[in-house]
Every structure is written in C-alpha cells, then in structure tokens.
Image (cartoon, rainbow, N blue to C red):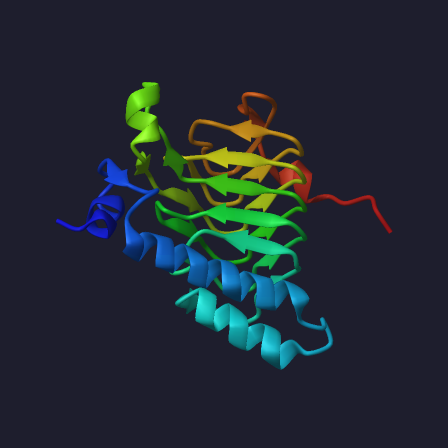
Length: 194
C-alpha cells in the first residue's frame, strides 16, 4: 500500500518523507501562491486556479485570498459557499463542505494528527481523519475545526471556537472547547436589523 493510500484510508502514513505526497503538497502550495497573487478583478484566472486546486468545486463559490491548503484534491466545496480571507485547509483527511456554507476570516480546518511519542513523530508518521460540514452552516471568524469532526446542517459556530467534537444540526455552538449552547428556533428567523 502506498503512503497516499494509507492517508486516504485513515491509517498512519509517512507524511514527511514520501516524495509523492511532498510533490502533491508543493503543487498545491504553488497553485495557492498563484491564486493569492492574482488580481481580484481577474475572476477568470482565479476560477481557473481554484479548479486546478479543488477537483470538486461547485459553481458560485467565493474564496477570498489568501488561501492555503495541503493538497486541494482532498477538499470538496459545494455550491454557493463563501470562504473569507486567510482560510487554511489541512486536507490530508478529506474535507467536505456542503452547499451555502459561510466561513469567516482566519479559520482553519485541520484533519491531521501526529503521534505523542517523539521518536514516532520525528519519523514522519501522521494520521488524518475527515471533516464534514453540512449545508447552510455558518462558521464565525477565527474558528479551528479538528480532525474527525462533523458539523450538521444549519449549525452556527461562534467566533474563536475550538471545535473538537461533532456539532448537531440546527444548533448554536461556541467556546473553547466548542459546546452546543441551544437549538436554533423559529424565533431566530426574526431579524430586527435594517
């Protein structure tokens, strides 16, 4: 089994010294660099670069630079998503972002973990588990989401949260660590803003 196959199956794999994975990360870094340096008025070039980076990128997606990701091809972004400045997708494990997701600035989605034992860690071992974000989720600014987490449809994650466990659908959650605070109700549909 190759190191990439181990990575994709959620097994321990060599993240630091496998040349194929190093090449994949360098390619993603190069595309991110080009994207981040592209004039925001040049939407056609931006879209072309994003399509090179993300194999499964739906229409009507806005990603504001700078953007960073490890692989790109391990991330799926649904239609109508808005991803604010300075997003980082550590996508050794798959990242699935469903439709109409809002992600605030300075958010990181981290699918990888390392051994606690220093010798094993220094050998390059890593394990990666998926992150799944449902439809119509709003993730506030400066949120960190860790490996293995699923966030249900219509959930709202408050700013500066550290999400270490699953968040149910239709739930307001925030904190460090992030906790479900309450269900989102019909009363929340009322907006008094002008």
